[in-house]
Each structure stands twice: as C-alpha cells, then as structure tokens.
Length: 250
Length: 291
Image (cartoon, rainbow over all chains, first blue to last red; front, side, top):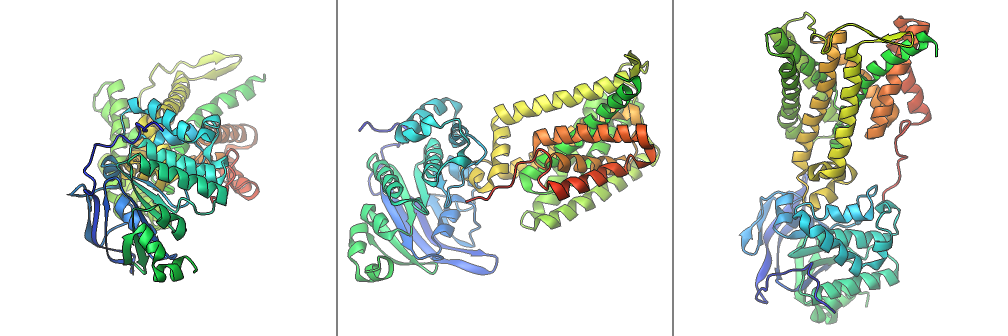
C-alpha cells in the first residue's frame, strides 16, 4: 500500500513523547470529572484509552483539544505546553479530534465538510487531501455533493474521520469511533484505524469496545472514575484478569 | 397594474429592504451564538445618526455614510467584546437580557450625545420623484433597494467563498465541530456582531434621507427586523430576505388599503399566526433530530 501523503509526518524518533498529559484535573461546574490524569502518547503509537461510561475519557480528549477548561495540570505537545492555548491554536499545533457522536456539519455537503477540515491549512493542500480521503473512503466520493446529514452513521463517521485527516494531524484523537455502528461498519472503521497506524500516524483512541481497541493498541490506559487505573501494552491488558472481568465480560 | 397598487408595492419594497437588512443582522447573530440580539435596532440607529451628524457637521456625504457604517460596526464589535463575551458561559436567555440592556444604554448615550431631535441626511440623488406607470418612486428608494441587493450578494459571496465566512457558517451548524477543525469561535462571535451592526447601519444610512432618524428610531426597526427574521425563519438568510420584503409589502398595503393606524399592528399579528401554524418560519428548515 502506498504511504499516504496526508500523514506527512516528520520522521520522529520512536518513543519520543508527542503528547504528555500531566496531573490533569477538570470539572463541569462543581463536579470534578478528572482527578489528576497523566498519560503519554509516543510518536507513531496507537494508544487506547478504555473504561466504563462516565470514567472521564471524553472529558480528557476535550481537555486535550482545548474545548473543556482545565483546572490544573498540564498538556504538552512535543514538549511544548499547550495547556492554556485556544482550541484553534491546538489544531494548528496538529491536534485533530474526531468527536464522539461524529458532529458532521449536517447541512453542508460531504465535500464542504472535508474542506472545513483544512480550515487552518493552506488552500493548496485541499485538492490532494480530498483525493486521499476519497481513496480511503470510496463511498464518500460518489456522494460528495450530498449533505452530510442524510448519510448513514457509518458514512458520517467516515466524513468526520476524513475531515480530521484533512487537517494533517500530528496527533489524531478518536472518540468512540465505533459507537452506534453496525458490526460490519465497526470492522471497517477499525481496519482504517489500523491502516493509519501502520502508515505512522500517532493516534489516541477512546473506546468502549475495549476488546477491539486493546487488540490493536501499542499501549493502553484503563480509566476509572476520572483516574488512570491501569496501563500497559494493549496485548497484556487483554490478558489481565481485572480488565477481562470488568471490561471484556469474561 | 393599478397605479395605486403599484405605488404601495414600491413603498413596501423600500420599507421591506430596510427590514431585510435588520432581519439579516438578527439571523447572523442568532446563527453564530443562539442569541437574539435586541440591540440590533440600536445598531441601525447608530449608523444613521452617526452619518447624519457627520454630514451636518460638514463631512462630505459619501464619507459620512461610510463612517456611519464603520462606527456602527465598531459599536457592534465592542458590544460583543464588552457585554456579551464576558457572559459567555451564561444561559442564552441571560445574554438576550444583556442585549436589551445594551439597547437601552445605546439609546441613552445617543440621546445624551446628539440630543432628542431627529436628524436627516440629504437625499443621495436629489428629491425629484421618478414616474413609473402612474406611480412615483424617490431616487433614494432605489438607493435603498440597491444597497439591500448588494448586501445580499455580498453576504452570499462572504459565506460561500471566504474562509472566515465558511467558518461562521460551520460554527452555526456545529460549534464543537467548528472548534475542532480550528475555527476561532470567539472571533466568529465578535465578527457576527460587528457585521450585523454594519449591515443594519447600511440600512439606517440609506433610509435616513426618507424617514429621518432619532435616538429612539431603532426600537421599532429592531422589532420589525426581528418579526421579519422570525417570519422567514430565524437563522435563515433567504428567510430574512423574504421575511423583510414580505413584511414591508404587507405593511404598505395595510397602510394603503386599510388604515395607517394598523400598519404597525399587522406585523405582530402576522408573526403570531405564523409562529402558531409554522414555528420554524415560512422558509425555515424543519427542525430535525440530531443523532
């Protein structure tokens, strides 16, 4: 498979910390949701974040993207603090998120949705980016002029993922990409995620589908009530008795 | 066509173009923030007053008009920065109340600065009415219509072609997603207020020669603009255009055929009926459930 130019990552030393989250706390008004979360995502890794509903996974991603206030702690991208940076500054720093529930621009066409993904990028990249996303998701090419709101859930997920890829992410945040999708579509989405990982993209994946996430993750964190409860290699966690009982139903 | 009817239609269109500009401002801010900005009428008034004052003070007319629009735009941007942005996390209803307060302040400040007397601008191209199939139209009315058409054209280019325009549109569809693709939504909000104010002010400036402008003119223009925006479908651009022109026509026809005493009542009765029968407005999109 040809390498996707969309990823265009500078060769980074494997093991370099691309994203470092240190002692992060965050609250919705007075209810504290994150209690000192620390995680690290190394360049080129696929890191999974699993845990039950309400454990704080989505909040953590929102904090990393700058759309949720951080009470204390820090977020570093390639060693540089972005804790106080605005959401758009973080996108420019290469942090692109596919939010939970997809959030496509429903009245806009598929193509315009994808074009919006290049909001912070030079206009010259648009044509190539579109071509690459359409190569990745051929179903979108045929419907490029249809409003994204009429698409099926799986196709909307492809639009949302394509839109994030158009921003040339250095770090791709995926929040529950398989939520509410049919099993065949889920398999397809996971195939794409694996493929992106194989081309060298750094991904932080939040999933309730712990088995699928852990089996493709290089490293994984298990979150419980706003704290990191466990961490390790994806495969090791799959075998961990505690994880199997709590999240895999075994 | 009956000359009389044609006459009413012509004056209705002129009035309608004015309402349309007011309605576009309501819809733009509503789209960007979900807020109904009840200071919109004061933005219109500020533009008309500033231009009239400058013109009376000896500034050449074109310059005074441009300055009036820019001053109103600046006022709009400042209102967002100073009054609306600090309440960012407040409920939409609270922000709406803030805009009502702002409208009172703007009215009061104008009254203190420029007095209570009405101002007027000279007609841009003379006051000799043009005859049209038995009816007449003021050259200034043509200016109003042309300004309205140019603004609609300009806005469609702005939202269709420019990066920041598309960012505003995207923010109105899905604020979170817009933030996540890097749209600076705070800037979008400030811009929506500045732009709404400037657009309204264009209306205030071109209508000032016909109807004069005073510190309290904005209230009725704002309310009518709100009615027009709601009639067409709050948040819809074509809806604001349609709602504005429709409202102007209805008002002119009521004044002509029934009585001018009822012309101000008709819009409010109309909006009541439309909201009961078709809450999304005449051209508004049917609300759909988001998944």
